Image 1: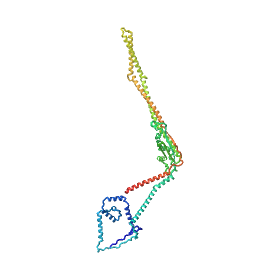
Image 2: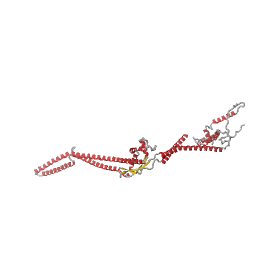
Image 3: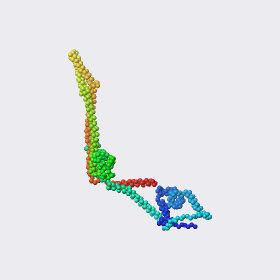
Image 4: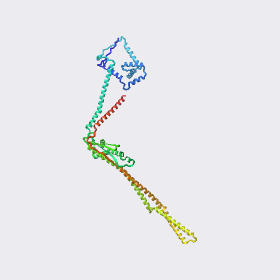
Length: 524
């Protein structure tokens, strides 16, 4: 007859039931965590919903719950039992599992039923004493659950404290400590720099060329290009080279009492000096009012004012050079056009004089007109004489002396007319005829007239270019002169320290977010 074993009580001191082992408590806590916490890879609710969609019968669910209880799994429902059994690699719905279970039960029955005549020899064995634990008060399931939940909450609070301590340690190491180092440099180490401010603008002469020039004259847009060009020059290496030649800019910042970060090395190259020049000289142009503002920083106030005045003089020389170049270009073209027109007119005039000298007459047209007039006069006289002769011959007894005299006059007039016609023919025909010469002289006169007009136009253009060149003159006017500062302007200690804190905090936040995203991607 078998006796029912007594129930063992829970020992709160050792955290165990009747067997007195800590492993039982740890196993119970792990079961509760597995039951309460979702899976890292797939949510519990999604797995249970997938199992529900399989259409399992009630008998299959009861078998799964019995197998889960047999394996000591803490389940909340039949579907949770199926999920946990599959997670351990067991399928409660395979027939082989049921057969193996039946076979195992049968083997236990055969071992229990043994022949009485068989004698089993028992040799002495080494017996190890187990730890004696006094039984504690038995806890109810609700109390046990509350106790284990409290342990879990304490563990969660402990982990939170550990994470907060790690967070503060990282913030101190990567944000607060670098900020303190930067603040110490700005407050204790950095050499103070004195800045001098100045402002100047570029103006043009009164008036403007063209419609748009007259419309924009007197505004800041009329000199916008010159202002930008001046700003580019002052920010270039050319200005640094001239400043180095006149004052020794590099030697000013190579003194031993300047802090190592702002100090220029002894054998500094032009690029290193230009980087320092870009930091110490700040130039800005405001298109709304057309004023160029310049700030120059130096280790002492007098040096700062001296550098500012030199840079302003360089800007004035640059403006004068730009406007002079524009005026020279514009006047050069106008003068060249005027000189070409003068040469062409001189050539046309010389050609006309040569043609006039070639025919030995100054006006061939008048010569031809005179020949024609003489021929017409001789023809009129010849016609009168012929009429007189006809009148004398109409008499029955004409006077012979008169008739002979009239005939002699007619012959003389015809001779003169023939000579004039020959002379006229010689003047109108041939390569060197007066008519051809007259045409060439007319063309030369027309060419001379055109050249006179072109010369007059070139003179007007030259005068216009001279006027426009005078209007393109630019003037640099200084509205704010540089004044020596009594207090250092740089470094701005508080602003730079706050900026360093924000910069380090932003970098730390960016790296933390990136690491969190990468860790989540890897874990999923």
